Image (cartoon, rainbow over all chains, first blue to last red; front, top):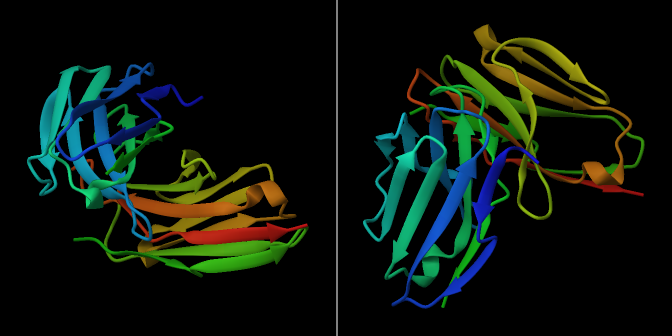
Length: 112
Length: 109
């Protein structure tokens, strides 16, 4: 238990669906992150939020839309995804930017 | 951007053996972390070690920031040590933790 909870753990969706991934941290941290891990590739940073403001958008397609309503919650809204978007999506938080990161258990997404 | 290289990419050990994993990085760093990814995908924090040496049980890590590398030592390996080990670094204060490609470790009984 790292203090970072992701739901759902597994998600299967069609290319026309709209779904959301949720991340909640119970550590009192001020920064939250979304990472993507595809098979045979290193983890890729997608988005960084610090104090609920987006500070990094790492050239991610617009079909991925992040939302950070408060410092404890982070969402990743998904719409019109492609099969190549199938991956493990990992959420993380840290006390401050560039501080020690703690990861959730991940949400494994399959796009049919 | 900063480059992170890990070696070896794959490692097979017999239970009880010791091993050293290496992480080289191309620029000065403010943060360096070692993680173990379990079979279910979760990244487990091993060490937060931008410099110096730390030990936790059978594991220890050393980062020589001036020479831009870090080492992870696993002693008396167990089958539960199997998995992928990642090194990740942050350059500057951007919050961008950049991961290496990982070392896949298999410990055989």
